[in-house]
Image: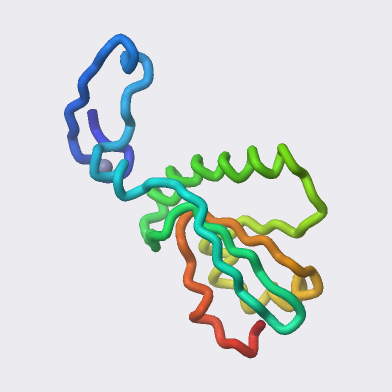
Length: 130
Ligand SMILES: [Zn+2]
C-alpha cells in the first residue's frame, strides 16, 4: 500500500477482516497523527476562548491538513448530540492568519469555542488584541 499522507510504501497483513478496509496510513503516520482532544483556555478582557485542537502538531502541508480534516467528525458528532447556542468557529489557515481583522466582531460573545485539526499558536498575537 502507499500511504495517503507521506506516500511511502508499507506492507500490510491482509486478512478477511481487513480485506475491504485496508489501512490507508503507514505505521509512522498512524503514530504521528493520532487524534485526541487538546484544550487550551485563552482569556481576554471580556471573557475567554476555549480552544480545542485534535492534534498537538503544527502542520504546514495543505494536502495533509485536508486529509486530516476528516477527523473533525469527532467534534461534529459531539455538536449534533448536544446542540447549544455557543459560538463555535472552525479554525483553519485563513481564520488564523486574519484573526486580527475579525476578532473585534466576535469579541462580544463569550465564551468562544474554537476548534481546529492541527495546533495553532495563539501566543503570536499581542495581548492588547484580546
Ligand atoms: Zn505515512
